[in-house]
Image (cartoon, rainbow, N blue to C red; front, side, top):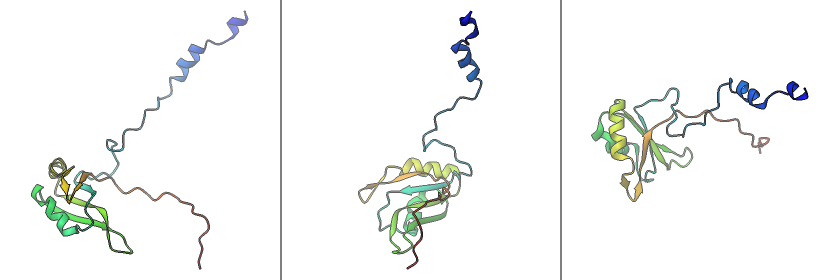
Amino acid sequence: MADDDAQDPVEETVEADEAPAVKPAPSRDDAPVEGEQKNKLFVGNLPYRIESAALGEMFAEFGEIQEATVITDKFTGRSKGFGFVLMGDAEQAQKAIKAMDGKDLDGRPLKVNVARPKRENRDRDYGPRRDY
């Protein structure tokens, strides 16, 4: 009778399965992002000599360019090697991605994809702030 008092481990597993299963996170490129603009492109691996105007000109053949910006270091003013292009609509953006992703520019293959919203700055603890 001691066996009758013990619970069957299979029954416990079935009961535990009632909770929603944890799914693996989608890859970073495939993950839908809240607030994502489908017409804003990230352009990475840019040569450091490229300026915002030239970046816009590179993508103009694919449609209306609302904005093109090369990101620069705030202290030196030097390009960080990436930028953003805001196209007229999502269809134009997709045409630009297909044509420009992997394209060689000064020996550097461009990385072009739909931009994701900037992540919130995580709380970083670098220790006490020193004011000299």
